[in-house]
Image 1 (cartoon, rainbow, N blue to C red):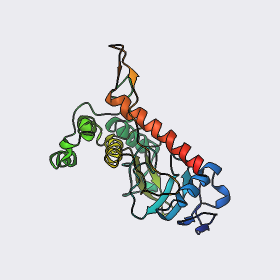
Image 2: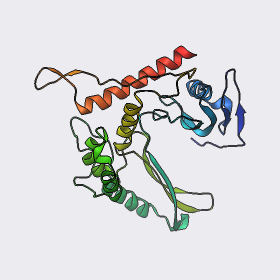
Image 3: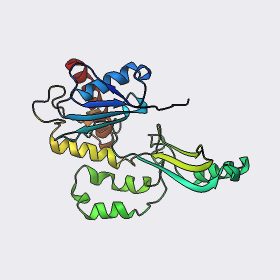
Length: 263
């Protein structure tokens, strides 16, 4: 699929609060994506919204969109993840330097060096390095108060093994050639678990309030730990993994229900 972005078009609707522009033709925006754009653009705290050519439905707002707010931080704005990274780096190589053999060798090198995927019950180490990467950034964060955060400190070991990994879902590493024949390395990488836990930590501190009191669209909700029957002791208990996963799902469901009721 090729997306050609033209001049931006201003979107308008009844109840709009944010000045909203789209670089994707309005008639090409998927209905569910367009509804999410209207939802976020009608919030009292919304100031500006921008719709990129690759916009598509997210959890609370479309992925591929920008939302500027006044007096509010929205950790849940895009899915369950606030720490993805995206980089496009131009190399010294060009189209004339590429051969099928060199491309295959480059991709094989990437696959060998960069873990891909997400941990599962069957393979909890999937997508991670076998040893700690001794990240300077994580060490600085840990020493600067990270170890005192009850939510985040449980992710230190996992995060240090996932620094430099790709993750799963829509994350990718690509070799691209631009219209001038220059080769680029482009990547979209995951948040290495720590960003998702950071989101939970922020919401816990705010006691579930996504927006200031009096917001017309979405008031407050707090992700609740989901109680599960433990397979080993056959008692109802709360584990860190289930708490993070189930609270995320429950929060997303509540977010969508409240958005639907407010319309």
